[in-house]
Length: 372
Image (cartoon, rainbow, N blue to C red):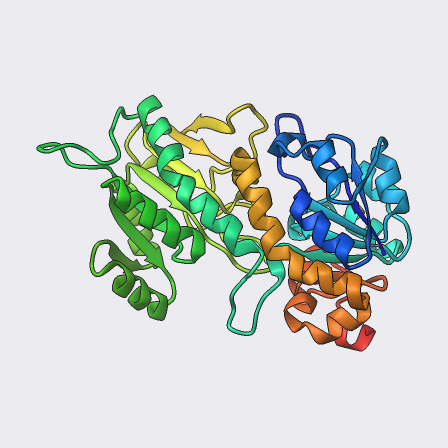
């Protein structure tokens, strides 16, 4: 099998992607499985992986972006393909990455269907216990970045120190969503001394979080009334809402944002699924920051790209078992033998195999089991 690792191209002006689909160490693992790996020249530059490092791992460096797509059987990306890249895809190819097809155009999705592309969305690979093994490391990274992102924006806005000092209280940080990102954000924020509140819709998860933090964070059910109450006094509001396979619900309205103190901060990490705040939007700029309703917003869909080397290592570690299985046993056998991998399949054999995706773009849904 030929595996292709292209250089990531921005999906829009100011939306640079520094991560790469596999590290040199990951390439070496696939080469051991007898795969031929093509790496586009300078594909790893943003994460400080040199062409030489890939060559030492057994990869062949190719000069053309298009050549990687035209020659490979399996394309390993980070983000979804652009319209131009979709035109390079060949019939029956396998495409893997954080694809987020729920928010893409219907035209791009139709292109994948017409070419009978099997698209594997890393964010949808799910184990039987509900764990998202490829997405979770990326969410952990984003969560751990919250104090440094929020701290710098508070400097720009309210001039508040996250952890406070004796006699001056710390910042109030409200986290909407108690999953992987929310949990690690809370841990990191507690480490710098912020006062943390977690709003979560699952009562059982609230009990788990209370136990984890031994009462060190305030937990509350994510009802509309509670969201209104807590957002109003938040110095920082962190959107960490995930509805697997679907668009994020808008839980924080413009009126709620307007009720926040001027210079407060919103970090909406749900933006790659559409955002959970009504005033959130993609902002192609150097820092992905803008001011609306007097509140600073950070809405970067690939925030872990800011620490591209760490994020690429994490992605490689998480995705490699699935990629190795595909290389060793073929796509069909891997999808049959690995239900968690099959859960991440969005398109196969010209059909949409995710119910939310089919509904969003008005395509007919077909079960992957029947297609296999």
